[in-house]
Length: 307
Image (cartoon, rainbow, N blue to C red):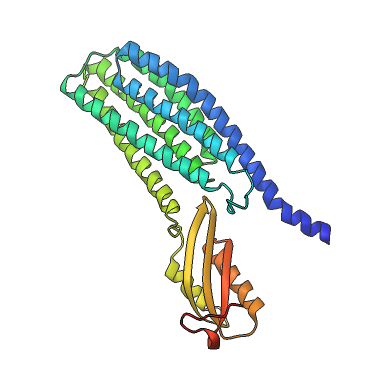
């Protein structure tokens, strides 16, 4: 019996370890492909005088940095908790996601500024060569999207890396469309136009990523948890008179915590605790719970006896 219990206890940790290893392999493959093609697009952008290609190369450079940071975060979060850092290093991946989102915003604003200047004076561009290079970049970006697609919901950090690569797909498609427009009709304003559209799309994704990361760092309630609804469900547990000082926050992607005080009317403390934890886990996906029980007749202002 003890052996079976021990194995059941270890299985979640083994699954988590395997998941981290799979994330690392995917990130390494995506980083290798991205690094090769960012050089190709940068050289191609200089050769063809295409802002769309240079913008995509610049974005791929931030991708390479983002993927490197993501690899660092996956490795760093494996470090065990310490007496000084009792929750471990889970927040490292949130800091990396914030850095990735900020980097995306900066590069998007730079592209918008350069696009504005090119709108005023559209330069000549080697359109056919630009299309060929952008098509090769699109294939590489789609390969990276396929690699990271299955992990995009694993963590905010992986989501940030995925958004970077997805932004590159949009950049490559836009570069191809601009190249065709310039080759077919001589519409050289198409180059800064599609660059601006891609930059705006990147801004939207980046802002969402930054907002989510800041929300976690400020210990806001997870998006899927309605705190008042949770308070109501916890109060409905038999033996619970009221719930106060309820706090719910996110440690890192997929790991949520809750603390609260519960005034109880029943002496069956164990049953009350088990049911409140079950409500938190099953209805609100909050696994880490700390619940302080207080006897109703001893619960007084500024003087609470904790059980």
